[in-house]
Image (cartoon, rainbow, N blue to C red; front, top):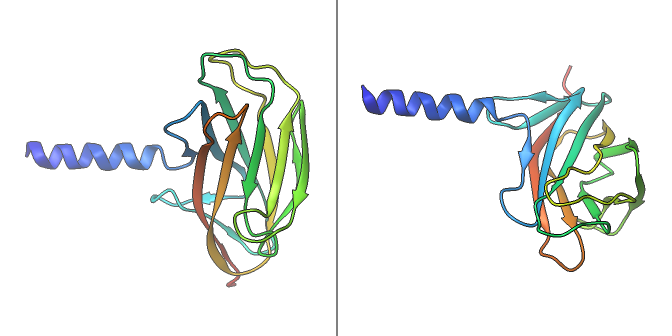
Length: 161
């Protein structure tokens, strides 16, 4: 019975934290959370219907022992299949990047100083599913030569009717 309760507790904990991808190590806490249009399965897998507009939030917290003012974020996804239709966020400047798997997507820089323990303003990424497929959305946070912090989430686009 004790083992059964332990397994049930583990399953409950794993399903309660399924809506976000999060980095577990590094100088920055990186979290991704769906904010509109995405459906989150019990496994943590995100899904949208083809043609649907969907938005996710990127939240980054300075977990280092120094002030950070040079944050650069890379959001890696296949834009031919999951189009980035825009981005929003106070203090953020973003641009689209092409160049193949692992490189293409969106790069952003924050004109914001975060002291240790402080979160940067939320960055919202707006997308539209173009093609039936499965992949991952990966977010990489970089600053001042420190090791890159990463969070990722698997997703799929369903074009069936």
